[in-house]
Image 1 (cartoon, rainbow, N blue to C red):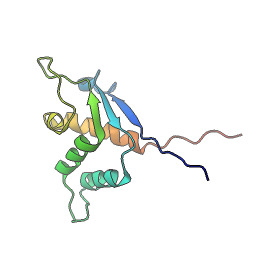
Image 2 (image 1 turned 180 degrees about the horizontal axis):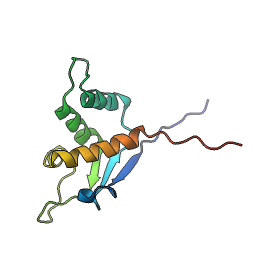
Image 3 (image 1 turned 180 degrees about the vertical axis):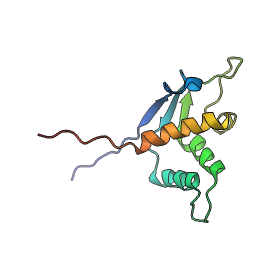
Length: 116
């Protein structure tokens, strides 16, 4: 049997339908390990192994494991670092919009090809 090398992918999130984030591009890991994805989902839904998820932990996982880069600057034009510190400087609605966009991308299953 021939060896197969699984390649990890990234995705660029765009926010054309969100006036507050129009022009923002966020580069994210699309293929995170399943263990990371499940821990993220457990914390978003509040159902981790200890009986209660942590929204803070979900944001930390996203910032540490998913976020790669972005074109974000602050009000004075200084680059906002694409890391935990930078992510935690965002407002809750902006951070949530970014995470929701990624979550949609990572769980989106393409339609099957039409086979005739």
